[in-house]
Length: 137
Image (cartoon, rainbow, N blue to C red; front, side, top):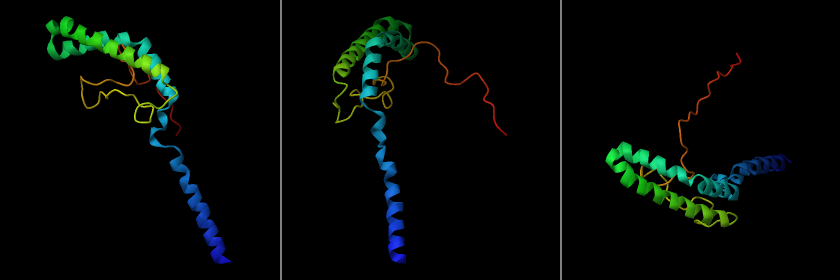
């Protein structure tokens, strides 16, 4: 009787250990995120021009800003509009490597060569709240 109870307890404990596998790491990339990324790329693609011009100004100076920076910004706008349209029409389907991840290379390894998942936001932003959070002692 003891063996049956011990084996039943072991099965119950092992059965509850499978709960972590139900939420895979790529679960945050789904069709809803892909649709949101497509809409953002279509609506805010124009923010690439001033952002790219500012980056070129910081890296290469004023004379390169209105030539190379403007041309690179316009090409980035066209890239975002193209992928926004493609992802808008294919959002229900996992197209890139059987997932919903963005198909373009990330900006992380290449500082000026890749793309962020969403278009850049213009202006100053802060991620800190200005209110103090009350602490319970």
